[in-house]
Image 1 (cartoon, rainbow, N blue to C red):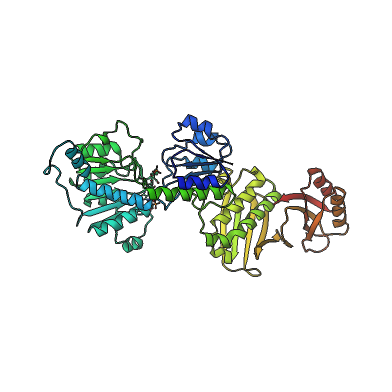
Image 2 (image 1 turned 30 degrees about the vertical axis):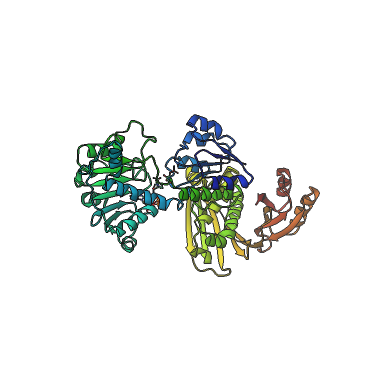
Length: 524
Ligand SMILES: NC(=O)C1=CN([C@@H]2O[C@H](COP(=O)(O)OP(=O)(O)OC[C@H]3O[C@@H](n4cnc5c(N)ncnc54)[C@H](O)[C@@H]3O)[C@@H](O)[C@H]2O)C=CC1
Ligand SMILES: O=C(O)C(=O)COP(=O)(O)O
């Protein structure tokens, strides 16, 4: 398999990739057109912020399974297009947190004490001590917008400098903010009250232009603002206007809408200090993110789960150990139900009963959707694109949970509903094995095998024998058989485990047997 690394990556990560035995190609500085060509035949793409993975690139990808971002922000990846195509997008959420927080702090202090400007002045043989009068951080109000990993580390450091912290993050509770010593408020209130403001959100629709003219209009004259998150969170033109007109005192900017920001007004003001996207550029952070992404890529290419995907739920290893057999169960029940009902269903209902109801079932739900949809769409369905495929087909997905279960400690039931039909398959986990325990009203007891024939039939003499005969005549070995328990003359289901797939003409011969109503093959 082939891995393309299209931005610079630490040797520590590269060597892990190379040692894995995959074919590793490093090509940096590719244009979109060049990447569109290069992406053909690539199984994994490793990037930083320099590569734009556009919808065109994703469309051109024919084998791509994972886009690995050695860093945090994935705003340079069309995640929606990747998700639709079933491509995992993973990042390395922790590796550069401290470096980005430290760089923010370096920018804060450099700006407060005019260090870059004073350095340039002295180098130009000037001695301008009065020109570079600074301000202290002590007792100042610091507004932190975005209280995730980096925002929290920045706030912690600012507290040590005697600053009062105001924070805004719609996903952080009052309680959590309080435990961090941060007073939660609105962005506007931060802009009104803060002496220093810093943003640490991802760039999203909601955060684009979060700090704009209206916000600059309410800021103090001595306010100073930092962006070490993403270009575009602070509107660049409004910022340039605010600084140039003296509405605010200064800015420190590490990231730009267009990088490099050739010709940007932000590079022209003496009151704005700038760095070329250096937040994560430390030896330590680059080693961390390169190693993290290398392991993620290798795991995914080896068919193991993604640990830090941004487009599928991430599950902690200890939780994965518990739910792992349920993934197999959910996918298998999905395949069986999808095969039995065929087409014409518009609702998938998943029922978790017993202990499993108390676990993180998000990935189990994805496995179930994958199983059902594979029977309709084919092998291209995976955890990443299954929810989108269900939605685009108008299939409603619902879940029921109940922590009580009568017979088994946990039971998983998948039901497909059409306008005038439904099919329901239940199963459980025994040790690490999965067992199908019910199909519609028929109680059975089947440990799934690689191939299973599901035959609806009437419970009467001379049905099972002829079925075995047809299979034997066609050289298909039977490894097990189960029949639903009903009264003679009533319809039920027969599950025949076989060692190989069963061709369509053999299924037709089975269906032709008197008493057999249908015969379908499910491959697990
Ligand atoms: N300059 C650089 O080299 C680096 C920049 N970054 C940037 O910093 C960003 C933050 O990184 P982390 O703290 O690691 O991510 P994180 O995911 O831990 O934190 C982001 C926080 O933003 C919050 N948030 C989301 N939408 C928001 C909104 N509308 N308003 C306010 N808060 C909102 C989230 O709730 C979360 O708490 C990244 O997305 C990346 O763009 C990250 C690393 C290095
Ligand atoms: O991790 C992030 O989000 C960053 O912005 C770091 O970018 P980089 O990997 O240095 O191009």
